[in-house]
Image (tube, rainbow, N blue to C red):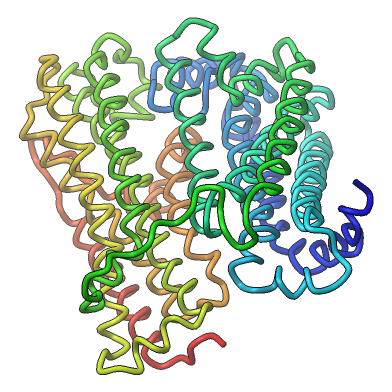
Length: 530
C-alpha cells in the first residue's frame, strides 16, 4: 500500500501551495457566520422582550426552519448562534470540501494534468489521497479557526467549538461523497453536480423533517441530521461527530475501491456516445446541449420545492399569528389572516427565487469553464460573433431560473388556493411572475462578472449570497430599509395587496440592464483565457 501511495506527500504540499488559497474564502465565510452572530446579537436584541419576540417570530416561520433547522433557546447568544450558523456553516464548509476534492481528482484528469503527474514517480491512488487529505485538513482548520474566533468574539468556549466542529464533520462527510462521485462521474462538472446535489437533498430533507416534526428516525437516517443533534448551546452532545468520522472513512474506502476498477480518465458510469446524426447548429442549441443535464435536474428539484413550500402555505393561518415579531419578519404590519397569508407567499417565493438564481449563475460559470478549456475560441472563430455567442448563454441563464420560479410558483399557488387561506391560484401565479425580475438581477451580476472580470469568477455568487442574507435575516435583525433594499428581492411587491407599487421592480430592472451592458461590453473587448 505504501508503494501505491508513493508521491502523496509532495503532491499534497503542491496542492496546499496552489489550491490552498482557494479554500481560504470558505474559511472566511464559515468563520464570519458564527462570529457575526455573537457580535451582533447583544446589540440588536438588547432586551428580554426583544429576544422573546425573536423567538416567537422564528418558531412561527416554517420557511426559516426549513433553511436553519430547529431553534433552541434564542434568548441567549450561543443559542441564537447555534440556530443561525449550524446548518449554513456546515453547508458552506461542505461546498469548499467538495470543490477541493474534485479539483484534485477529476478536474486534473479532464485537463491532462493527471497524465503528466502519472508519468513521474506517483502511485495511482496518490492523487485521490492527496485530494481527500487536502479537504480533510482544510475542513479541520476551518472548524478550529471558526471556533476559536467565535469564542474570542464572546461565544461560550464549549458551545462555540462544538458548533464549529459540526462544520468540520459535515465537510468531512461530503469529502467522502465527493471522492465517490469523482470516481462515478466521467468529468469534473458531473462529479461536482452529483456531490452538491446530494448535499442539497440532505439539507432540504433535514429542514423539512424538522419543520413538520417528523419521527426521530427520519433525522437519524440523514447524516446532516447527526450534526443537528449535537445541539450546541443545549445538551452539547459530542458523540454524533464520531458518526461523521465513521461515515467519512467508509466513503473514502469505497472511493479508493471504485478508482481501482475504472479506467484512467473515465468514470465508473461510462459516457454514452453522442448522436450519430448531424451536428449542433447555432449557439443557442450549443448552450442548451452543454447545460441540458443540470437544467433538467434543477427543474425536477423545483417541482419538489413547489410541493414542500406549498405544503407550508396550506397551513399558514394555523402556524402564524398577529404577533408583532411575526409581522416584522413576514408581513410588515399585516394583521389579518389574508394579509399574513399573502405576505408569507411573498416570503417563500422570494426564497424560491434566490434558489432559482443558482442554476443561472452556473450557466454563466460554464461559459468561463468552456473558455478556460479552449472551446470558446473555435466557436467565435467562425461567423459567430462574440455578442451572439454570449447572448445565447445569457438567454439560457435567464430562461432556466424563470421557468423554475414559474413551476414552483404554480404548484405553491395551486396548493395555497385549495386550502382557502385567502390566496387564489391567479394571485399566487402573478406573485411568482413578479419575483422573476429580482432573479434576473442576481443572474445579471454573474453576467457582468464573467464578461468583464472573469478572473474573479467567485464574485459571480455575490448576488446569491447577499440576497439570501438580507432577504431572510435582514428583517430579523431589524436592519434599516436602505440596507435591505440592496437585495433585489426586497423590492418585490405584494401583488395581492390593495395597492401595488411597481417602482421597486422598475429600479431592479434598470440595474439588470446595467449589469448586462457591463457584461456584454467586457466580453466583446477582453482577451480570451489561455
